Length: 631
Image (cartoon, rainbow, N blue to C red):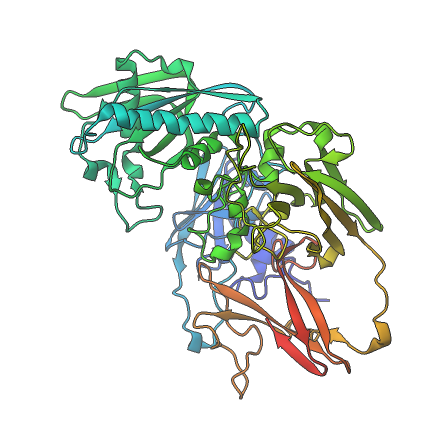
């Protein structure tokens, strides 16, 4: 009987020779080459050319059998190792790889491939060739991300260095400085309220420090990723100048955990930078200016414009408190996504739409540890029927003390997929001590009630999706709080999170939520409708599921009538690829309020491992008898 290749890579890569796929043939192949006793060596890799993002097999010796212990670079970009043996690595090249060398580094020793990997241009839609492979996004490991660089309880001291370029001197430095003082006073209040007094943020603000160069030197306009902003290329110099200016004014940097460069840049757009740290601040212009300051502990660093909203300042400080733990980061902005709708939780997250002043979402509140453990309930999804109602209370200014209420519910579906359920509420307008957060969270039309439930999905652990997503998104259909009668679902797990009563108590708002899964589903009443999607054929394709890529409505693969066949369009990295599905009703009666959920498997293309994450859920109002609806 013929020996089958061990690695089944059809449809995932260009042609790879059997002697790299079959372990027996691989051994015979490597016997032809003299290999050193230690250190990595690359004998061959295939394919020799392909699209950015392709799957590649590297053969040689001295590779680490622990995937993460191999650092692989293809065409100047890191590749993701998805399988490792001592003589073979299987990797996914980066979606931005270019023509260039293949390198493997193990324990600081680097091996170079025998040739460069050549990047192929993407095929045109009319070429009838397979499109580029799916793009992968890597992630860390664990059921929750690690904490940030600043302790979340006790005292955190921030030093704000107000500074100005040579050509943007503030006309009234005292007033401008006072505005910065007031901004960070709101940050202190936010952290005090959000943590229930467990985090005391103390802020000192320097007098103005004159920078060495003009605004054009420190600011970069539109034209590169992340801009308009303070130029990333000069951040080290800027922070060194600020550190020296603070020291010159008598501030001891060792007394602080965070330093902020608040740069006077009126009229210039700035997004701000945050989330990095360092302990050495050095700059030498070769003309007499020499800075070299080292602190006893690394300082968390922030660079922002002088008049940044307090929400921006709290957000950037948040980078020092929380850690997304994934390659996608903890920000949940929509502005830097290919498809902005993937950031639906941003209005409920300080790490998202910060200038609207939301609280941290339940995921980060759980990480921060500001809720008493008695106010957090953990559930683990399984295949046994489960149904339970919980009273969930909004954050408020004091932590709930009732033994029958919770601030959040966390549902573990798998090591990489969690659901969080919480209640959010806008502040009381006439409160003696106003709540500074959640003043603009989305409500139902008309603004009544003033709060409700949100359910979010959080992807942690290994993230190998073939779609661009945030680590936190909403599970629910609504992009507002859910109220009585609303629900969020994961049909694959028969999981339903339903709001039973949105007003058990009005302030702080208490909502009763029913969480259930694996419930017995009754037969269709009367059997008069029959919903289905055409099953897939031999090529694992169905006429009822396809991809629509821009230009939308036109497809790479069609039948004679112009209808999509196969995959419709070949998906492309860094473009919006719409996932379309046709749901058929072959019964004799219309059916209403049909919920449809799209899923992606992680990682894609490696079989049904059960790790399916929902992309989105929507409701189809009506599917007519003997008809169909495409969404």
